[in-house]
Length: 199
Ligand code: SF4
Image 1: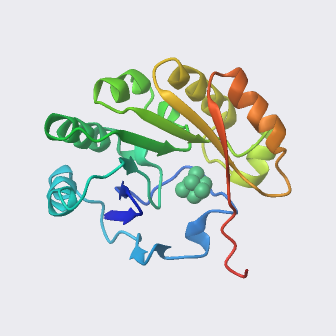
Image 2: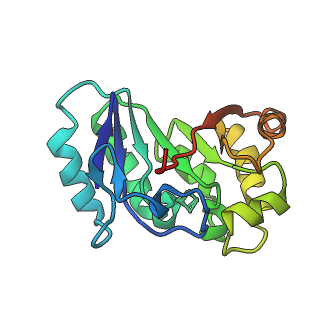
């Protein structure tokens, strides 16, 4: 559940996700960087902390990132608790990589404020589309009004966090428009490479 790429430490706490993106790495690979990210079962908070304790002092990590083979806010309470633990004992920045559906997945909760209070420093949101129609076609969300929910999430997050919007570089997506949306919502933009196993 804990893996690392360069100077960043990553936490993979779930394989669940309310999207079915056609470009999702899970469709093509078992993991990244030689780490298998298919979970046999979701780790408990204690198991995540124990795994972190094994590696956290190995070096000075640039960031700890909640990001894996699933949407971290599917396990909101787990990521909040692990972030609080990290912030209690270490000075490392904490980032959430998310599809931006945390508020839809956790209705009735003030998700963004809870993330902030638990110590998250940065949020990176995969918007992946310049409009709802494209989003529905390529990300195939299960939740209703997912695109609007992601936009709202970005807007709220940008008021509290250093917030980045990302999109995969695929032909269906107008990256210039996604950048414009990101900037209009107060976020920065980053293009992501499409992981295409045949190349
Ligand atoms: S939102 Fe992320 S984890 Fe979920 S299907 Fe899309 S690419 Fe995969």
